[in-house]
Length: 162
Picture 1: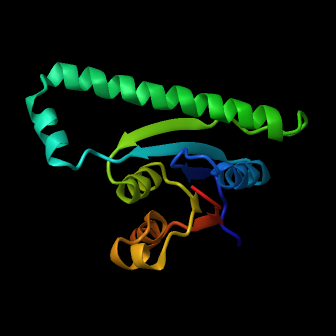
Picture 2: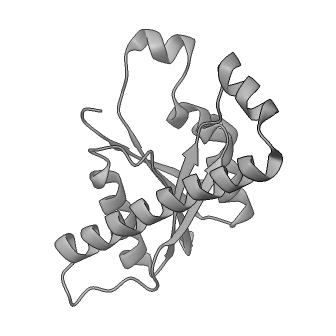
């Protein structure tokens, strides 16, 4: 028996050119009557200056700033989903339900794997921009890291440009 796809985690960097990957996630959701979780992971600050600012900010101010940042991302994602559905999906085709938006702070590969596991996802859909051979050797790619950390099937959509 073929596995049933009920929940799809679509992992997005929300950069220009990521539409083909979302298109594939929507196609899979329509085909399988599945639910899409649109996930964006925000890389945590890593410089010494960022760490100092984080350490010295009053916790409530930092929390408020983080909430505002996440709300801005959610609004941007909602608009992108709306634009996509309006421009690319025929009116006779419907998603089972509107995509659920998740914005999390953390290393993208870890966030993707954790959300997929916690949401009992049946499929992860993500784009891959390629990158240079050197960057893949020394840093790896988010896509490669996700594949190495999960047993959930990952559908990779090649993307062009940045």
